[in-house]
Image 1 (cartoon, rainbow, N blue to C red):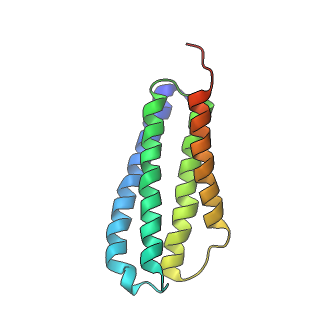
Image 2 (tube, rainbow, N blue to C red; image 1 turned 180 degrees about the vertical axis):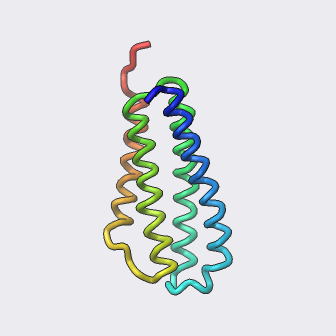
Length: 129
């Protein structure tokens, strides 16, 4: 993918993740008391926080791609997106259904960590002008 294409895709994905995070935060503030899981409010707060932080990370990756896209940057963006889906999604699922998604949350957390490490590799990788 070209640098402009990657940049646009990451910024768009990050913006959608952020918009959904705001919506889910609003829903969570009204629905937490009626959710079946006894720790729903805490679960939803954690999910929204991680979703917003990693939405910003996606936008950041898109901005960095404007200065030169690398496979590391593309992989970082993919990892952040996967983390949002797996980690945040499993917490939303648990809060609203009181049913565990099993190992999905730890896999999502691992994706977040991988995304940050890949972003570091992008920053440190030697690139020719």
